[in-house]
Length: 415
Image 1 (cartoon, rainbow, N blue to C red):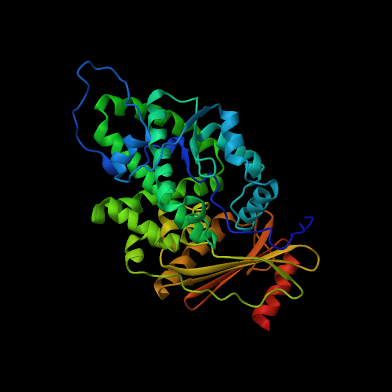
Image 2: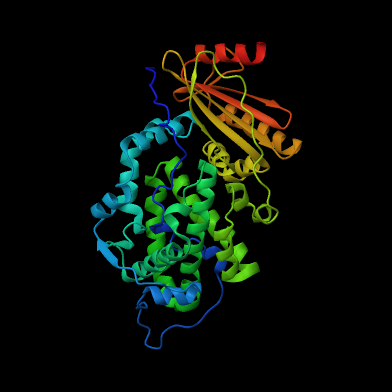
């Protein structure tokens, strides 16, 4: 395999790709959480939907609209151009490379830039752009779905007017950035769900649900696993986090979280850890490869551990393996020959949590790896990796070629 030469600073924290977008299949992300018996069908039985403007959404969200926001209807190609205009090819290329290091990008997944463009064209229903102070809505969906998109995007406009989303959503790490995005998307998704269950008739909701089920079938089968998980996590986990805050403290409580946002995806997945101010534990990487230079240093978070495991086993086992995450550090190096090496250091809250992750790693190795002569080294895709547990910590080291990994193991473990 030809080594890839990396430039210092190319591998940055995963940014808020398609931040402030409505992913069509997740317009009604919380429907299983909110189901209840209702009978408020229109007298004439017609399936029409309410006009949505920023004041309408302001009344639901209980957040004052400071000014109106234009809504621009665009076709799918225009939506893709708007959604991707601030993303460079290098940035998407390096994100794909990170996915490959973490064994998340399969050969059949193709090029991430193409997959991202397809996702933006076919699956993004709406997008609020803070620098434009405008929202964009695709012309390919029905009146009902468009109504839901507008509720979601107007919520982003209200957030921006009160909390300045352009600066709010830039975290220092992949983990912290994703946690911020979870709050922003969870809030908007909750507002859309409240409108759906308390303002629409049973028949209106039935029409929307049928349309959503049709969309869902296509999206799950066409979107690569890693991209799908990256894009949908903020909506699903963010919604449950925001529901937890709202049920206890109302919309004022949600506003207060914008002033003191979650520090990690762990705090989002486990809201009690947010309330307890449980901060990430610093993880300590081991001895670096001889002669290598550091290219990137980032915290991935509990959500990325779950995605890493979930690509190779069922979701319940993956989540169990990721629970108890205390902190992590992903350091990527470029070797003297230009080949890439990486170490993912993880620390756990308890010995039991560390043991659960060890079990998950054993299952991952059994399911996914190809045999290698050295029993301590495993092969998957274009990378070799080795892992070990040390007390409440784990270290996973990756390399493009087995010789580099063997040499690194000698330096680290045989000293």
